[in-house]
Length: 71
Image (cartoon, rainbow, N blue to C red; front, side):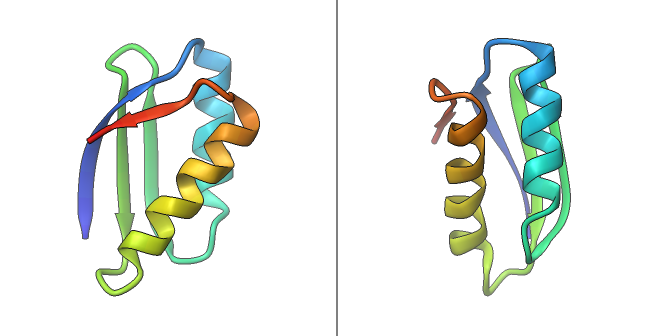
C-alpha cells in the first residue's frame, strides 16, 4: 500500500533524517519526505501498514518532537 500524507516538519535536515529513519524500519518498502511540499510518501505491505505508520511517526518524533501527520 502506498499513501501520501500531509506533514509538519520544520527543516530540510530533519526531513532527511526522518526519511532515513523510516526507510530503516522493518516492513517499509519506500519512504520519501519532502520538506518543501510538507509531504510524506510511505509504501509498506498492506497487512502491516497501520503498525508501520505508527512506528514511522514514533521514529520521526524522536528526531523532531514537533513532527505531525495531518490525517
